[in-house]
Length: 105
Image 1: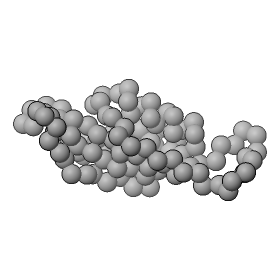
Image 2: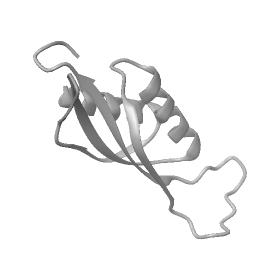
Image 3: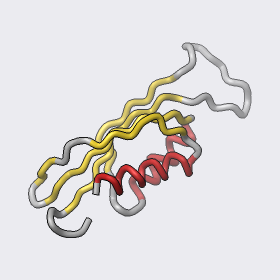
């Protein structure tokens, strides 16, 4: 399940126009009768691409949930981009998928 989550997240970022910096699998945790599989992702993307990535994560199967999100500007305060240009931001988030131990996803 963790490898599937990792592949899907990478696919969503790249198909939306973002650039993957890193994808790290976390330690699976028991959550009731399910196993929670977290993946931490770092990427560069502008605001429009970030919106597309988040929408893809939460509206496709397998169902993935954004547990935390950090967005950091990479331009100085007061920067005015030229018309039609959106600067990239550093985006870090943790997503989780849930699996039934010994069963399907």
